[in-house]
Length: 253
Image (cartoon, rainbow, N blue to C red; front, top):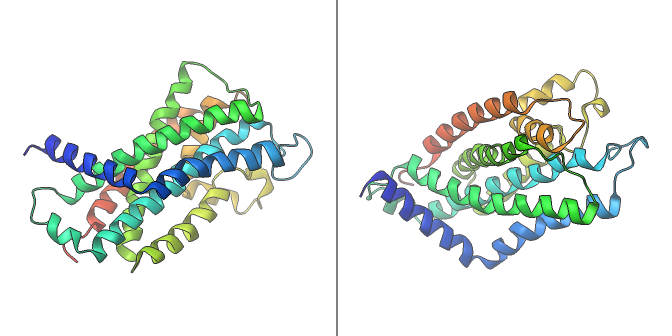
């Protein structure tokens, strides 16, 4: 079987495995909808009013997308690795031509499709529910590679968590412990001026920062960042984390 054939087969298997888990399917799309309704429609923004939601509505679109780009790959891939370890599935995969990198790439592609659909849902809800006006232009299409790169990046990180954690429960605990600080310290919902001056340089250490900055640059008319440099940095980090994640995927366990 060719590499493309192996990827297609593993992608199909992973896709059907996702669809069979109805609870996972439901919350993958329900969770982002709840985020928009709570923060966008109920809490709402208070421009010039001070506080965490003091920016215009369009500013927080990048934060909404960051939620699914961050949480879903970490938990899904991490749990899949842990579940495969518990069921000795990697020992079976080791007897096939499928490599660890190919396995992780197939899992990442499934997540790109799933989260791409969830991101589209978020954008539609942001417009319909909160009345957000997106800055539409040809550059807005860069949202697609930014989301895809972010998903691959956190799929790699999820594979590392799945290797380090000793169970699926451990994966969920570890992924939440990593994701929550990243979410609020990556220029998503909390603006840099709300943080201490000494801490602001640390924002550049979060890979989610570059994804959020890039998305904001093409969806928010008053953005002060540029998409292309952030996309390049996020892509480079995605390669690093993907390679680390592929190395972390066990051949046998």
